[in-house]
Amino acid sequence: MLTTEENEVLCRVGPGTPMGKVLRRYWTPAFQAGDLPEPDCPPIRVTVLGEDFAAFRDSSGRLGFLDELCCHRGASLTLGRVEEGGIRCLYHGWKYAVDGTILETPNLATSTFRERVKHGAYPVREAGGLGWVYLGPPGTEPPFPAFSWTDAAADELVVSEMIMDCNWMQVQEGSIDSSHVAILHLDTLATMGAGPRNVGSFEFSGEPWDLDMPVPGRRGGAGRPGGPGQPGGWPSDDNAPRIEVENTPFGFHYAAIRDVTGEPGKRFVRVTAFAMPYTAFIGGVASGAVIVVPRDDYTCSSIGVFKVPKGAGGAAASRRAGGADPAVWGPEPENRRVRLPRQDRAAMAAGKSFAGFRGGNRIQDAAVQMSEGPMYDRAKEHLVPADLAIIRMRRLFADSVRRVEAGQAPLGLGEGCDFARIGAASQIIDAGQPWQDLVPGNQGVREPVRQA
Image 1 (cartoon, one colour):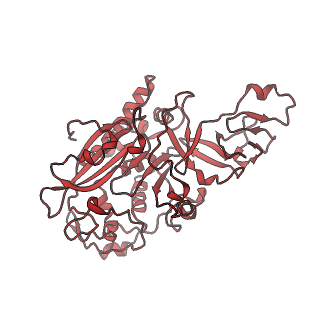
Image 2 (spheres, rainbow, N blue to C red):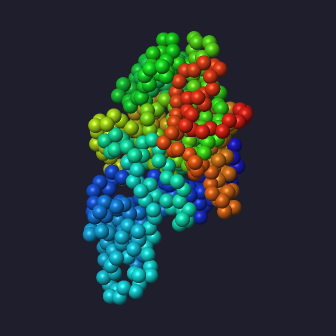
Image 3 (cartoon, rainbow, N blue to C red):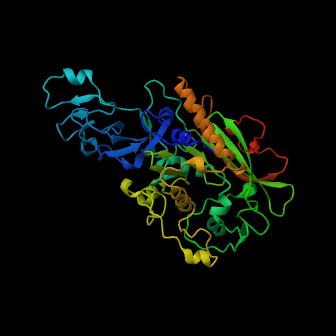
């Protein structure tokens, strides 16, 4: 566990905080590019890392990411007019280019001021359906994390965003926690055909209940999870996976290793990779990633980015409902805050549902993560061996805080790493086969297995 003071360092992300300084040294996916669909469209407000910004697309289609408040008298640029190569403040007509250059000052006749002052502006680039910004010191930008999906065309991507009312670390830890999958997500496994299962002394029938839920992509061929009586489902009754962790140039990856039901000598392995500081590649999830970005200390965005077959209308699906159920969260930025459905206690009592929340994994995750409160105090927790990946992530963040405070770069910037080769896996293998063979592109650093 952490002390209360260590927890504060881990969770608080605003300007000048230790973690805030660390996170500003990475490229941050701050908004959906689809929220700025065309040149000179209305600007948007972006809240990220405890600060507010104005993002816009100028007449040439270039993205701008500026401090929200006009440097003249502090009016919000999100009210402004985007026109003729810049954004104009409504209050006194000052106009700014995407790089913060002051183009016009109608209430100041001379050009001397605008020639020597620039508005706060930050490097921004569009990739993978997202607008990525660099908020760190000028000239310290790391390599851009060009993941396998960041250069995909708009119609090959589905981007879904959930704004959650809790600290980002609660959601991030859930993304890399494998032991909850076969417990919290029993309703999902039932829909996938996993059959009856036990959680301790509780016997779950495994009958599908939420038939409309989004189901994680099933793998075909030799690598498809499966097992006796569980075609295409979850091939293990083992709820206490063994965790093996390795550092990588981008952060770390780990294997959750389970026995395969009815197949001695086989192991069910799920490999998850974590690219510092936001992005998880989760074993068993279709091509793409889950990204968790703090908006401030008490809210965050959980963003799913997934590749779909070319021509499948990925961008349209993203616009319709963030790639998800519009009854749960909507397509517009202000409507993406999670609204949990009512928990169906009657279905739980009848043994039809384990968790009682319709909507699939992300809603089930949101329910428990937000239930921990606005910012969970980890001084109250009791960790077990299944939490080794979470312990590793916290260690990398703590080490990065110390490095930045010492004037060094944080960990996991990916020097010499091909981000496009980062991968996850979910597969049955022979007991003697190294799980690292499933993800050679991760460049894991072999080390002794650590025990909690």
